[in-house]
Length: 507
Ligand code: HEM
View 1 (cartoon, rainbow, N blue to C red):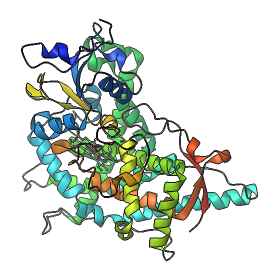
View 2: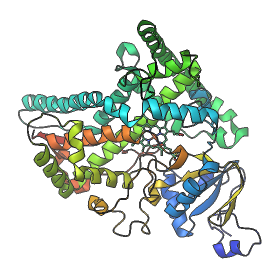
View 3: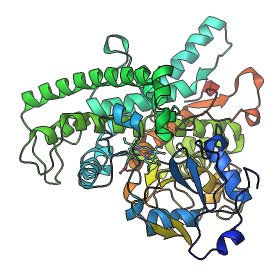
View 4: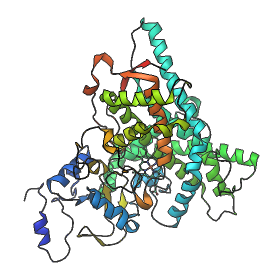
């Protein structure tokens, strides 16, 4: 048997007990780690197809990992077995950076998770709260549009008419970060004296996404000390904590001045525009609340909002703009919708207009189908032995769902699954909110993403304004269809190369 051959299903079926999911032969110590490659979602998609295996069992060092590769299998994991797959694996790096993994996304399934998630869904990310903060997004998107216009005028004057490209990836990352910053703290931290918050976020993402051998092969943990990885993690954790401590002190000063907030008739703390940190501090200070947070937990949940909401959101906007530049037909159709339905009255589109923009909604759906920002979703951990799709799976197995592969599976997407074609969503109710397992970029079930409305509000507003206000071309006369679409390595799959594009002001 070669190292790369999976046992066939037939062999498995000859066994007496329900078989384990197919599993490629492993190397000693490494298990299957050597097979993963730079783009695990591509490798796993290829193997799943090759061996016709909706569920596959791998071993990364000492950890058993099940890979879920079809919508049917995903439904079984996240719907039929949602409860017993709602635990999370622990990682040393996450423990050190996220206050013992007390953030909602990494904490173990249990009472703390239930209460913290409830708090988050009700007070931080509810559609009411999202709506109440539309001014923040409108202002920030307005700033983005003005920045591009200024760049354009400036270049015109300087270069005597020759336009230069703007770095849309950079601008969109700044937008996502500024919006969450204002929601979380009530103000922006633009660097300078405040310590370059965005640089800190970039470093945090890079440390969290780095391969840490000690997570999988515990006796090799010493390697991290030698390579300096441990010291780097400690440095990021310390700098982040210093920053968050400052924001907590500012929040405490505000609470002291305004007095403790009590719930309004809808049970929401503070006014709907109160920054997240003030709301979380209320749950730390007010002993009449049933659920009490520790100071570190306040910080961990704030970090969750940044980790969950910045890179993911900017990645989605970046791919939407890339696909539009690459597909002039779709760009033109969307521009027609925006320019005819919104008209010229306002300089920028505001959120009240978004409901009327049907084609925009299709474009966003199609973008997230082809480019789920977290292609393998967030890992889960099976709580008890069970049988899934006719296979035995043991308690403790880590579960990764390949949303990227599922979004391109010809079984669910029979018409040109690799093509960017928003019209495929016409006359279907298929949506990404966790009911339709062929489209699960936000996961599903108990641990599904609570930030969908929050994310979409930013993404739709930004894309609508960028597409309505400007015409876009690639620099150096490169045709849109030749745009490089390769992905970066890491937890989020953003563009490998930044999206540089030439704007022409239309509105
Ligand atoms: C395009 C943007 C986003 C994408 C693609 C995304 C994706 C995801 C995914 C795949 C999960 C894991 C789901 C699962 O295991 O079933 C998740 C969880 C989570 N997301 Fe998002 N997310 C986005 C935006 C946001 C935003 C804006 C926030 C908050 C401001 C947020 C906060 C969270 C939190 C707190 C969790 C953990 C939930 C739990 O474990 O109970 N996300 N997200």
